[in-house]
Length: 475
Image (cartoon, rainbow, N blue to C red):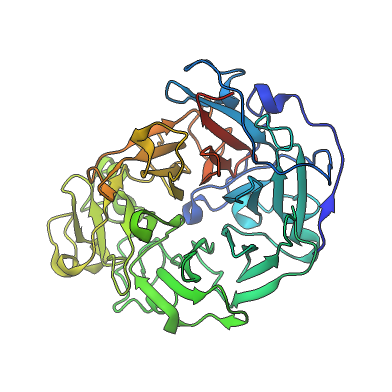
């Protein structure tokens, strides 16, 4: 579990161009939306006495950026650097008050069971020279050689780093001013389910109370007795909801907690891969809408309807709320919850029990696959962005017969503590995929977002392990 330091030269291409190497195998793309990646890991120069990462950067004229923004496109006045590259399948990200960055990486069958990097799945990064590029990087935590697979969730609370490692959320102590932990972690929660379509466990910690909110995505697409099968009805009641398909609450101040159905906080959420706190310390989560309406119910839905239904969602998560899965899905054309075909739905007319379910506060095009979400709490970006939400869209695999979509970062403007409109969003950053928006051929796929103490926005990629740092009016 000890930190592993390695010294090599920093690659010149980090500053100037997107990754050139792609790799390919989609494994079980139906189960998780085609996660693939293969580039080897890159460690950078070890400077153990480096200064803290927080610092100022030189101003540049609005709209003028050195390099090519790491291959992505941004609104006028914004610039990006490739903060780090080739880290593995980088999922979620968190930034310390001093500017040090921590990411969690994942591996396993959803990436084709490819060989992974040496060292731990957790990565600490520091920009000691204040040039927008991490020059101190160390890996720590669970590793492939120890039988681990990494994870998605990561966060900071009371000077400790919390991370998902398989079925467990662990806590690493960070000594005052420490860059990476030196000791072994403590178990906070264990026994989290790992089977089925959505085995990841992103989480958010309420800094005021220490309550930890963990997503437990569903094991199935729509709770059919035979998953993802033509015209098979749904199980009723859906017993999967006892341990999956919702948000669970635990105490980040405690250790040795065991997962059980008793700690369920909200239900009916298929896969909340992004979870965070927003205005008024309100809990929010992204939700992946269900798949295969047209494929599994061709008598009720055309291929074009399958391409465009249902919506992806941003949820305002409240205790005891039920957001409708599996009985309901959100129809973005009608802008309401309707009954799913597995539960007696007729192609979008019947509402039934969905009238009593909680609707999203914002919605997005079908199958774009929202992952990380963060609210902009800085002041560096223009006023328009302050208080709004940034969402990383991993990108679709199943929008045929039309083109695939997503593979971008979207901004949701907020007014008076709530979205400016249920269907209002802006594509903030694009170009991550490169020439082809296809899960097996995309250069990069956005996965996590976080705001740094100086107001910079960080975006991660779980295809080829890149991290971008986006600034406004700065070099």
